[in-house]
Image (cartoon, rainbow, N blue to C red):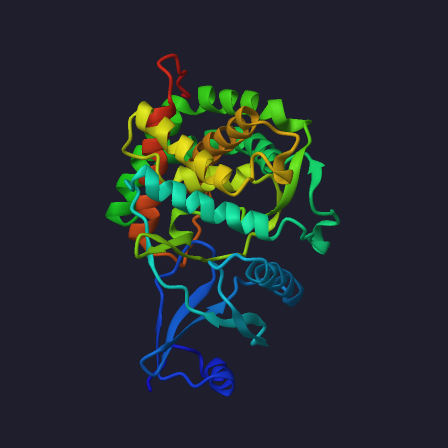
Length: 357
């Protein structure tokens, strides 16, 4: 078999389980690499190289969380078969999770199913702590998602004007599709950033010193990380970012993938579908959020989404225009991600926004 897998890794995998066929999965934004591996006509595995700089301790920590989820009744997570450190990188072989990603215009019923699966994960790991964060499970603490966004906003107050200055002088040549996306995003930052960043700071300040119930969450559960088959959820994937935080962080990430191309009424319905999914697993009314009512929980999730939307847009322009970064992901995927953030920002901008010159 001509394998795209590095030879030394391929030898290790075959010691664990014979692999007859493999192909690389299109790269995402995390810096990791995943291979779809087959053995015969039945067995299918995911071979993953973790992002550079990930320690074995962190990999073991994440695997312990996923293992707990499986043991406690969450059927959507993979089974880790083996791990190894090869060439200074962390590798894992796990069962392949079947299914397809929901479209961004998915029905509210599908969105609710996905939210309920995420909440099932929360319920299954409610007693878990993370030694790396020196915190116990079910603690009340200020959301790390809130503090990290406040810190990033402070940095972007200096970086966004620099981006616009560089653009005015002339951006280095970019692939056409990416250049078009960057140009639209720059226009949006120029017209809306000052007002938006002020609104974001005000929204987040409500939670800056307010401890909220926290537990292990997925933290980065994008639309692409929940799989569906036969009318239901078939899998959750990508657990690299798990940490202690409010479950509202996961609601914000999940719902954020379905708000583009919808009017205000439809967006409100999407948020309610997410809340309904969380209620199915008692995340809002049970011990996971005993000190936080539905309204406050939703307010935190929406504040985090709005912050992520604008900060994400500014981040991409900073990385491309100021830092000239290279990415593993395909240029088309990057351009599409920027376009989505720009459109979401369009829907958020009030008529009284100020321009940044």
